[in-house]
Image 1: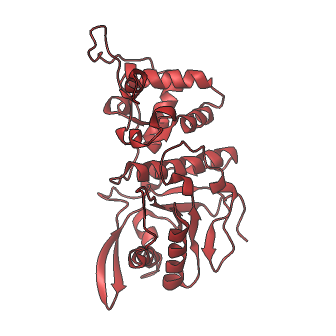
Image 2 (image 1 turned 45 degrees about the vertical axis):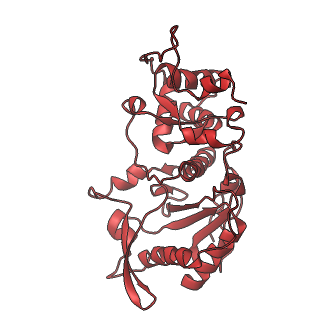
Image 3 (image 1 turned 90 degrees about the horizontal axis):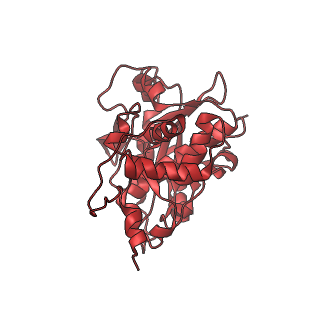
Length: 319
């Protein structure tokens, strides 16, 4: 049953004494509040625990957990700098879980705009943000420099659609024209001075009840074939070097279903035979947002499956 407290929690504003929407006020942006805005500018959709850990990392100290929650409420309801995307209230226990926040237009004016790639699915975009935010947090703990998307884009002339890579793909006896884009702007990890690791993220997030185990192999295979085509050297260079000056790249595929993981691996076999570039992992708890996951250390400390190569670990150097 929806209660008054539930209705108040779902509103992105307070009511005044007359029961009408109260006007927003300008809050003082302390270092901690600014750290919240900067983190959401980078990742777009994050839950309270993830924001808490990133704010601690930015400030180099632990803020009080209760203060952060109160500050999030003020930034959202008093100032209108944050909002909570309505789709998260569609889950069964939405009124009893951590909220997921994003910047409003009022909030964005205080921080540098960051590149984003959005889909039509909140679940999909939140999962992508949570994955990259987890990797960045683990990199911080391991003292591995994180290479931001803006740093990568600063190396090349301005492109209208920098993450839409045109591909001419031989397919079923003809050549098709395609544009491949990652699910999060390409980022990097400076795991070695001479060998930075650049990452293309692909998210497969099943969010519908009664999901069928039928897999569209042709669609998965075509996507992998396009990415593989982009890595082929033509006239001395591959497309990732020509377009954004990346010497090499790894493709991270994260899916919520084991059968989809098998389909991705089989498609890599069909297209590449073997490949060290395609890394695959299943994260089943992102099927729905009925509960809030913690930062995912498993992404860093457990192996990613590859075809023809041993599992890849972010916390271990390749032989």
